[in-house]
Length: 113
Length: 111
Image 1: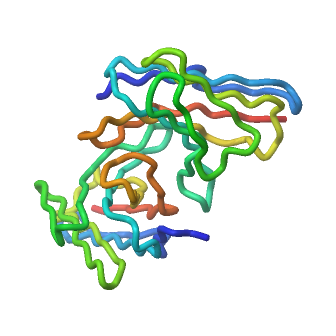
Image 2: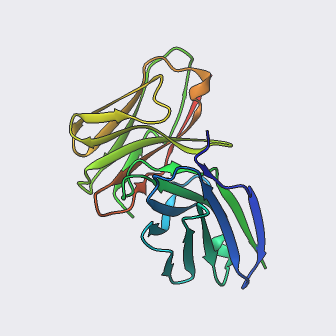
């Protein structure tokens, strides 16, 4: 039972354009959401998070949108850069914090020149 | 980078042998976690700790045990390794007001 779903295994975007990564969840108790970025042979690196009391959070080129009624969140990267090429994981927690995370299966983003 | 060290980074072991993976932190964070990453599954929580000697099971705890005798160390033990435990294992740490920070991972192969 996959409670956090990333239905697109891969995404290719041109440098300078917007990358949009999507994530759906089924557990209505989730109240804290995070995005992590992972390069090969490294651990996941935290990107951005959002609490369920908000619908948007922005940090530089990264913006996360949360639609609670649809149980959907998305990560926007603008503008996309070649260094953004990595696997992106969506994660969720029902503790209001980053503890005990449930992860999606990941989306591989490739930013092309 | 958060001060998290996993050891060993790579290990090959035989089926039926015990294996212990170590996670060491220098951040004095309260919470520590062990996740495993497998294709098609993302990262799944094995066990976690919310303090010294306080641990609990995660989503995929069968076949694993943990111990935390000091704030800085969290050990994951496979009592009798099986091929299904071939995976990449990640340790993570967090505190009540921080995000979760991950170690570099341990690639374990059970042959």
